[in-house]
Image (tube, rainbow, N blue to C red):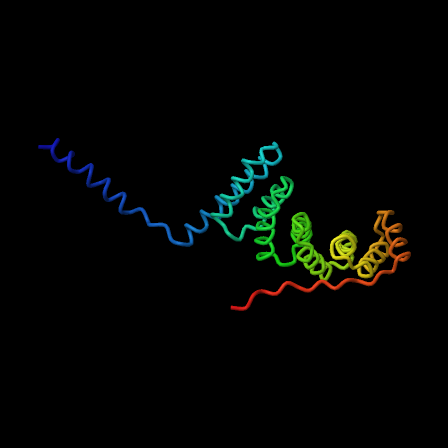
Length: 201
């Protein structure tokens, strides 16, 4: 009789104990996901340092799935894609960073370089001009803008303005002086490049 009693008592106690465990709240679930995302970010950085870029990309992707506003994971993944010449993927990642951090200077600069690598010179120009609005002393952006206007958009007079600004800011590239001399020797007018216009429905 006692044996039968214990046979029923044990399942009852287990059921009672399970019932006492509280169901996690949405806030607790979100906090858990945030902690996991941060851990994935840390593992991604560690993988990068070890040279395991494929694993790093995987960790950063997992981090962003759990925490969509973790811009650091987008940024580091964008840098890996950029170094691999996967420019469209890099642009996507930098764009996510800029949604979350609109004035992230490195993301703007790197996205401009990625645009330039796939011959989207006007998009690259726009990013650099936006960067200079909040960081006017960035002479590297002035240099890149000069090159874009000179070599891609065929607007040497605008290129001259940016090259001169580059030198004023203390840019160290001495070739810029030679480029300025060439522009001054052949003062061709700028050629207008119409902006792209989306097709109306």
